[in-house]
Length: 290
Ligand code: R5P
Image 1 (cartoon, rainbow, N blue to C red):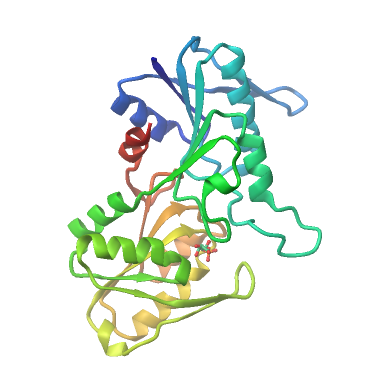
Image 2 (tube, rainbow, N blue to C red):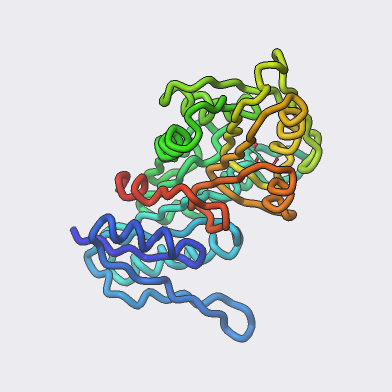
């Protein structure tokens, strides 16, 4: 079956790379708005009998891109696609995985219902915390793939002597896994989040351990940056020579990227969300999963 790769509005760069790797035809999802603001979605390519791979990350425009994806998936099927796979390099709404306050929508589950119209959903390192597997919320086939090999290679090439730090227990699935892959030292910190912007992270152990060291802090998402701010301040105090923050997904709200750089940290992410710090390409990982 032939594959047709279609790039959604915030994923065109990565979608083109995937198409090249798959030797598949690439086209852009055509999008415009009617005068009343309603979205107009059009697939210009002939997709009859093909495996349509729609690559559409749900960030930096989660709501628009979610609707765009649902419309595009239905349209591809209506046009006769044999199979439709949605690749969401960043799958939004995964952090809303329980009713944190009475009456609140458990958005992760609703998002999954909306995207169940695809025959398959693939996401890169979705935020799996209380929900353990994508398959627990999707009814359609769903799989998560990880950028950790690409990040491990990047660290081993550029910061081979660094100690790798995970800012909280959840980040251990990336920080420790990556450190173990390349045989580098690792450490997981303890984080307590009081609100979206109030976070306390404790760097424990002997502070001398960090003197003149290169430190790489690895997390899945850098959003407001608060999870990174505290360890950076403490590590600087402890004499760390260079601090690098690596996020799989660079969400960067509230000027987080600028603030992190101002603190003297080097910031690097993958290209799941287009942003100026996106230096690690994950298109090969996506192509390999298709
Ligand atoms: C939380 O559980 C995630 O793994 C990240 O640590 C978090 O989303 C980062 O958010 P922020 O940059 O706003 O602290």
